[in-house]
Amino acid sequence: MQVNETYITYRTKVNTTSKFNKEEKKISASRRDKDDPSHIPPRKMASTTNPIYFLHIGKTGGTSMDKLMQKILEQQRPVFRKYIGNGHYDWTYIQQQQQIRESKGFPEFKGDDKKNKNNDDDDEYKASSNADVITFLRHPVTRAISQFYYSKTMRWARDKNSTFIYKTLDEYLDNPEDFRDPINDGLGGVMYLLGTSQNNWIQSNGIESELKILLRHNKTAACIRAAKRLDETTWFGLLEDLDRSMKLLQFTMDLDRVPVFPMSNAAGGTRRYPSPSKDAISLIERYLAQDIWLYEYSKRLFNARWDYYVTKNANGHGVYIHPVLPTLPNLHDL
Image (cartoon, rainbow, N blue to C red; front, side, top):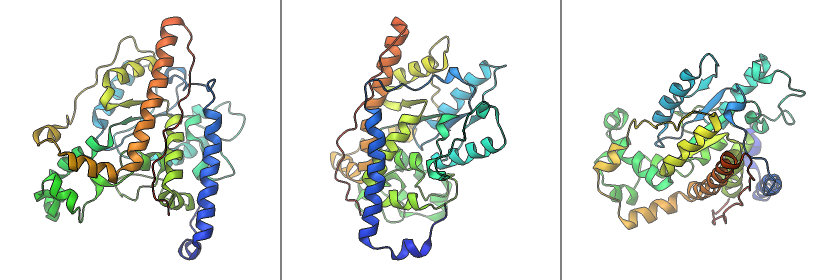
């Protein structure tokens, strides 16, 4: 759906708010069904041969996850699973790739009674029906600090002679100037799940849709929609809860043993530098309200999946209780 540039430029605030409210109400209505205790848990990855998409959020252990998944899938041959990783892309890229695969009649679409589309709206294409989307999350504050120090080592930063490479973390937060990625709310998860990032290093479907523009303005609706997308993942891990994350990966892939997470790019930069001050942490938290809210929800969803799989593994059956959303912060929607 291409953007009507004239509409976007000249729409009134009243009309914009109306569209935001409609989007938020639509998403909230879909969530009410999911809050029922009988909500079905995610399927096991081992139950299909769907392609696996790894939504690689920067500075969350993604390089290690790529290596681990490639090793696991290699060991599972001759069963073949297409793995799409080793790069940064968002949810709209997954939707686009699955639409291409559907048009070409790839195996995961065989036997489908109907097309996987909703009113021919690319934004609503439910890619997770025929693909296993996985991701890794990290607390947004530690992720931001890691990205700050890591970015200082990048060649582009040195070539550009960016001022941030000469600053301490506190000095940078006082005046971020020309580099805002570490404190860009959404790069810790929300933008990847929605496809609303405008960074050229994150692949997307390349379409600046009206919905993307609305979600950049209405941060409340963006949070709710991002939570819904996280619900659609087949598996996700938390870097701060690595042991249980690997155990959940074992459960969903029916592995004989708990996989060992390789420590690539082991956040050496974060450990080499001083611990952040309390003021720095507080300021980063104020910058990252959406991602922190999503992370709080992710912990609830993670625990719900953990409880289900642990009881199912022990007793042969489990009761899945879907978590409620955390209280939404005041996000100053436009």
